[in-house]
Length: 382
Image 1 (spheres, rainbow, N blue to C red):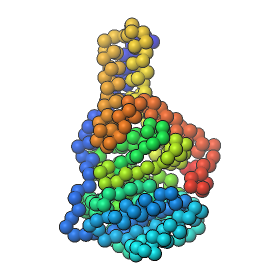
Image 2 (tube, rainbow, N blue to C red):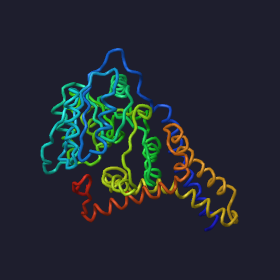
Image 3 (cartoon, rainbow, N blue to C red):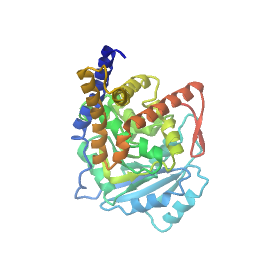
Image 4 (cartoon, one colour):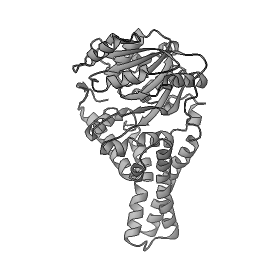
């Protein structure tokens, strides 16, 4: 490569790495944890969709029912499970009146299974404050009360907590920490609280808190019935209805083990990729941003070291080294703040490369009209 080209590439990489690094530094100051619970115990309906969750449902019920400072009911919808999930819920409901089993109706055409399950749960909730919770989330005893307190203090119609992501397999370790990196590196959180544009909406489908009236005004899950990605689509639906949304750091009150195998990580991230970064309208810009700022710096560094920087200008060397630092810095800060693996942060360029590969494969599959499956149910390409 010519010195001029090296200078251009190094400068390009530095800019693309520096922007999310600076935004992460700003976001870490405003991405707050939920406040202590108020003096009065809130009444909350905890709404949990479950399909073939026999391995996890007992753990979910244990942590929810151990909650303090809240008057709660736990509604679990059995979505045509074939593994005994319903029997486990019925057994707990027979000894704890706070637990209710809801039998799901058959999935209608045009609906995603999770959205249909959540819509049916909303029909059955007795209290006016609702927490939609995934089965694989574990809560601390004060989690529900504190999440309800954040809903009150934020004055938003819908709030979403981002739990601690527990990892085990290789792709869990490599890819799941990128959830916080992408959130904090590319969403201006402070602006999202003053600008109600749907494009600035964010959320985590593992934990949503809202109130009955706001949910009904937004259209709820019926408004996003075909979506596979409620983490993005539900907050956008609220904002399109003129309602506000907010997010909070739930690391200290909730944890989640989304997947247990690397194959499930790939399939899980693929199934909703084309409604997020992997959509036709965003995949090229995000590929440029992520590859240019978080893969290219390391390629340039390796090239420079391989030739002992022969033919490189001082600016090119300095820009490359600064770009590598700017790329790794937010991952290290996020790892420390959210109790993630530091070694995963150091594997950042590999993680970004695999993450982008998942997005592109998902988009190609969508273009070919191919289907995938999840929890034993076929999913149409979105």
